[in-house]
Amino acid sequence: MTQVSRRGRPRAFNDKTAQNTIQSLDRAMAILETLSRSEGMTLSNLAAACGQSTATVYRVLVTLQQRDMVDLDPAGQVWHVGVGTFRAGTSFLRRTSLVERARAPMQALMRESGETANLGVEQKDEVLFLTQVETHQAIRAFFPPGTIGPMHVSGIGKALLAWFDDARVAQVVERRGLRAFTPASLTTLSDLRADCAKTRARGFAFDDEERAPGMRCIAAPIFNPYGEPVAGVSVSGPAFRLDTDNLDRIGALVVETATKITAATGGVVPMAKAV
Image (tube, rainbow, N blue to C red; front, side):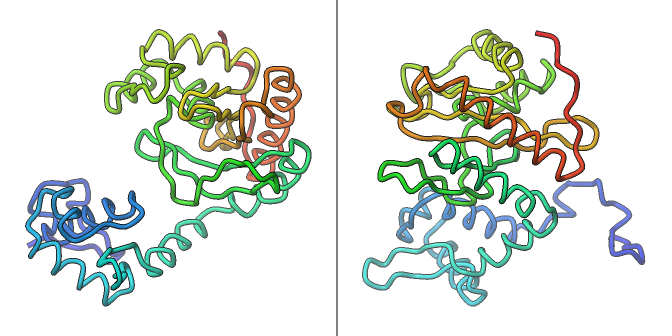
C-alpha cells in the first residue's frame, strides 16, 4: 500500500510505474484529450482515434458527461468537450497572473499594430495559446484559448526556441519532429538553428507563412525572474498586411510589449544571447 504524507503527497511521488497509475482514469483522460483536439467527433470516430472499443469509450463519455466535461449533440450524434473542461481550464489560468497582466499590453499592441495579439506558453514541446485580443479587421487570425500547435511553425514557438539552449532545441526536434505544413516550413535542425540565430539577432521571431499559406506572425519571448523564456506574445495576420516593409516596425512593437509583460510579471530580460 502506498503511504501518503500528511501534506497529501505520497512518499513514492516520483514513482510513475503502473502501480501508481489508475488505468481507467488514464484511459478517460486520453479520450478527453483526443476530443479536445477536434471540433467534435462521433463515438465510432473517437473510438478509432483512441484505439479503444466503442463500448469502453461510450462508458467513459457517459461518466464525463455527468461531470459536464463532455456533451452530446443529439442531432448529429457528435460529442464535444463540455463546459466542465472550461471551468477546469480557468483554474489553471488563475495559477499565474500572466494572462491578467498581459491583457492591457496586448490590447495596446493590437491597436498599434492593427493585428490580432496572442499569448502562449510552451507545453510539452508545443505551444499552448492562452488568450488573444482580436483585431476588428475582416480577415484575421484566430487561435481559441487552449489551441495547441507545433513550435517550429509558430511565431511564439520559434521565439521560445531561439532562447532555449542547443540541447533543448535538439530534444524538441527529436520528440516532435519538423513536419512540413507549407513549402516555407523549416524541416531540418540546421535550418531551425539558423532561424533561431536570426531571431536572437533582431529580437523577434518571424513565421513567414510557415504554418498556413497567406498568414504571418511576429513574436517575442517573455522571461521569468531567472531570465528564462516562459511565454511569448505575438501578432498574426494576413501576409498582405504583415508585409516585409512593416516587419521592423511591428517587430519593435512586439518586443516592447514582451518587455512590458516580462516586467509586469516580475521577470528579467537577459543580456543578448550570442548568435
